[in-house]
Amino acid sequence: MRKYFQIALNAWLMSTVLAITQLVIIYFRNGVTGLNLFIQEWPLSNLAVTLAATTVTWVLAGVLLYLLANGKINKSNAWQTFGFFLVMFVYLNILRERFRYGDYHYYLEAATALANGQPLPDTYLYLPLWGTLLRFLVPLGDQGVMIVLWLVNIVALGAFYFLLIQTLERYNFPRRISVLITILFLLINTPLMRTLGFLQVNLMTLDLILLSILAYPKNNFLSALALAVAVHLKTSPAVIVLAFLLEFNWRWMFWFGVSFLGIGLFPIAMHGVDIYLQFVNNTIALAQIPDTNFHDTSFDSFLRFFNPFFGIQIAQTRLMALGAKVLLLVATLWTMTQNVRERSFLREGRLLNALPSLFVFMTLASPIVWDHHGIFLTLTFLLMLKLIRSPGHWVVFMAAYFFEFMLPSFDFFPWSYGRLVAPMVVLWLMFAFRKKDEPSSFIVSVDQWLMKLES
View (cartoon, one colour):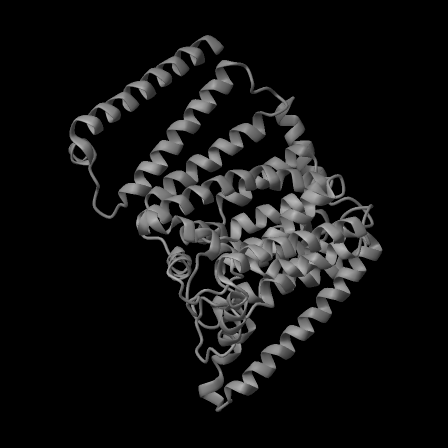
């Protein structure tokens, strides 16, 4: 069989060389005008995205042929390897069909403002690092920046696949189950689709958080640096720092402090201290929004809906939202404490037992919670597969999972706010099953089924 894969690989190489040669000859003879004669843009398509998706898909096909032709795929890695290519090919084809992308415009506006010596626009709601980095891409123009961020997100998706598998294995999931869960989780995932469709920083941020978890405690510097960058990209991962503090690892704390301050000095060197004051002002202004957006499934947005019906003042709504978040914080810390004490998820270390509940507060405490923020609840939901044992609780969990990850994004009060309720339901399940008396029947049954398939 390898002989035929080698023939296919040689054909792929020849086709690649011919295509590149064709492009080079056309460009040097006729320039961009000549290329336009051979490349068409189909209606309701973005040519740059089409070419990028086609190129990446073609390269991945070549990599797959190389692995097959050289016997690099075997019984031990077949599931993981084919799962990776399945996920990548599916998303590359889906994203090729999207001809409009969203939030990168806010990033580009901020980067352009910084490049022109202007203050951050009020639509930029992140620490200054991301805008400062993107200012160097401003000369590429709108399409150029969009394609760079598109490609970065594709790389982040590939990295997420492998990082998630390794993280589940870190929580003692069998390898076969870790791979299967990751494949199924990624193939049907509304928050992930929205993240990629809006060219958000969420996936990159989550990759850094998972890298931080996996690097600890063998490489304190890398772990601390990864989380520090994640905090500078999204701010909300600062909540995750608490889980690391519970380890009382002073070396990690030192490297995190040095990394966080060092990274923070870069925007200051480029634009001065005032850039952080602009970030604070934008954050404060965010809390003053008076309207409800059903895409925003935060406590703030939910409570603001009732203002015109009951004559509630916006100041009172803010207090109620703050009160709800305080209650959530208390519930999160209590659940986290119980999970750490009972070692619910793993029999060693405080860090890994503290993380799942903190992701809930990290996601819901924000003044704005878009549907793509649900990607940060990945571990919170998936790790529950280890704990739930009773049929009734399985039904509750599956309902929460459906609302968070499978239901398409829609705007219909109050049903849109299922994504607000679902994480809190899982937080309750996390507390209810804090005492892990016996292995989950799900893990045992699926592992046995996969072993039969391989035998």
